[in-house]
Image 1 (cartoon, rainbow, N blue to C red):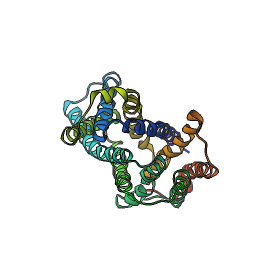
Image 2 (tube, one colour):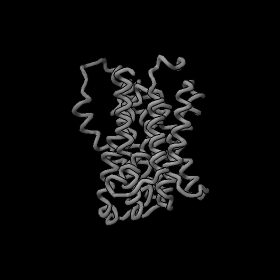
Image 3 (cartoon, rainbow, N blue to C red):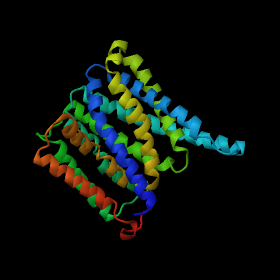
Image 4 (cartoon, rainbow, N blue to C red):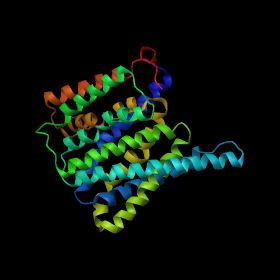
Length: 300
């Protein structure tokens, strides 16, 4: 494995860890805060967190003004596109959770993007090797064993979560398209503010924000705003630069396994043999997906 691929994989693994723990924070916040309000606040916090990062580390040597304007314009366009997709995906996910979707079913359905990414990627000429398809299938089996512990049936919130998985698929593919061409931190910052502003508009139209409820849920909001949004989604954009989007989606789907493991280690929740097998299968899928490129067919 190339050094850059290893670094990208580790960044996405850290992203999955942060997102996995965030499921608990989202569930807690969902008990008192409506979906659009929650997404608005967490996204705005995520954008604010990145402003000093851009100010401190975003300085570059003097360049032609026309070049600089073009770079900023590209980052703005990329951020708007990714921000709209992220806003829709996050709100669909939070609506599903607020409507009572179990964490297991929510995690499994949301992470179905590991199946959708390579399928939709075909239409964008992002073909995958047979090993990646095997890894996708194994990851889907692992997620099922890990998350679906009772009869799988469809409820209104399930439909929202499936739509969420499709929107996350488009967001992942959009990041894959834009991240090599723009400043990743600027892209992430614009993405969060776009998501926050659009969610805020829907919040004012459809919901009744309550300051006391926001203050009561300050810890979940800070975690999802600073870490899950500001840090993790930025790591996603940076990490995807060096990987095929299908491989990246497999690594990020570990968020469901991380959520279960974190619940076992931190909260004392027991993992059943079925769930342990699911975690093992997912880790095997990750290893298969990382087989050196020279053993695969040429990827476009």
